[in-house]
Amino acid sequence: MPKSVLLSNAIQSVLDNLDPVIASLRKRPDYDEPQIAIVATLTDFKQCLLNLQLSNPLSIESLRQSLDFANKTVLPLFLGLITANTALMKMGQLNLKRTIPPEKARTQNDLVERLQSSVQIYVATSASVLDSKDSSEPDDAQTETPFDAPRDEREMLFSCWIDTISNITA
Image (tube, rainbow, N blue to C red; front, side, top):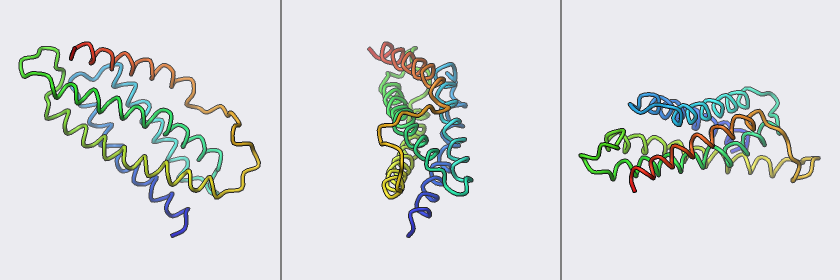
């Protein structure tokens, strides 16, 4: 199967799994700044993938940027979200600091894990496509992406949220 077809399938799989996760986050009773930041990050990633999917011919620079964004921002975000939900699931029934029921946290983790798997496949496929392309720019070239500025703020909000969850469970 040609790499372009594999890449297209990987992008479509991520796009198919993104909307249920975003909807699940928005339906949380504790939907606030940290979750808003996660939704904004996932929405940016979705737009990046949609742009990449419709580019003709394939933009190697856009592919490189989306791969970087997936590796440095999206995948670590999933790990934090799964960890926070797992901590919420372990809280006792009468714990007043539990913000969502364990069943909802478990369901959300299932959705996030499915999305995480599809993003990992996308990352592997993208890396394979980039390895096969003959690039004229050096591998260590630093490029500015449209995600750089807001990412810092989102990472800070997400870190605050994780710290809050960690303090609740401690």
